[in-house]
Length: 191
Image (cartoon, rainbow, N blue to C red):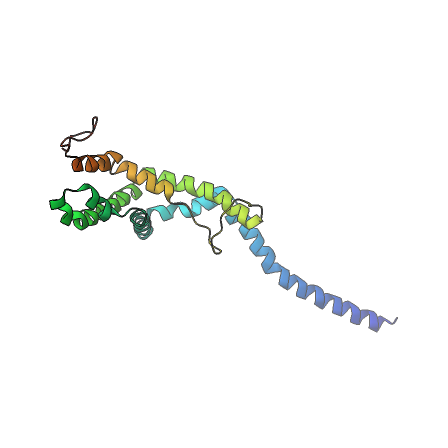
C-alpha cells in the first residue's frame, strides 16, 4: 500500500468523522440542555413559577375551571328544581349570576398566595410525570394526544372551598321544602 493510498483513506476517515461530529454536536447540546433545564425539578419549577402570576394565564385557568364546573352541573335546571313555581323564571339569571360568582371567586383564589404555593406543588408533582414521559418510564402517566396536562381538580376544589359552601345548595333545596332558615351552623343566617 502506497503512502498516497494511505493519505486518501486517512482523508476519507477525517471527513466521515467530521460529518459525524457535526451531526452529533447539536444532539449532544440538546441532550445536555434537556438534562440541565427540563429534568431537574428545581430548575423546572423556577421556570414555570412566574406563570402563575400572569393575568392571562389566571384568566384562562378561571375560564377553564368555570366552564368545567358548569359543564358538569346544569345550574339553571337545578335552580328550576329547587325554586318555587313563581320564581322558576329567575333560574337562568341565577345560573348567570352563579357563573360570574364562580369565575370571580376563582380569579380571587388564583391571585392569592395560596394559589402560588399550590401552583409550585402541582408543578413539582407533574414534573415527576414529565420526567417519566421523557425517559419512557411512566406506565401510569397520562399523555393526552402528545400533551402533558396539569389536572385542575385541586384548583377547582380549593376555589369552591374558598367561595360558596355546600350549605348554599342545601339551603336552596330547603327553600323548596318551605324552610325559611339556613342549616344550623351557617354563619350570618341568610334565611
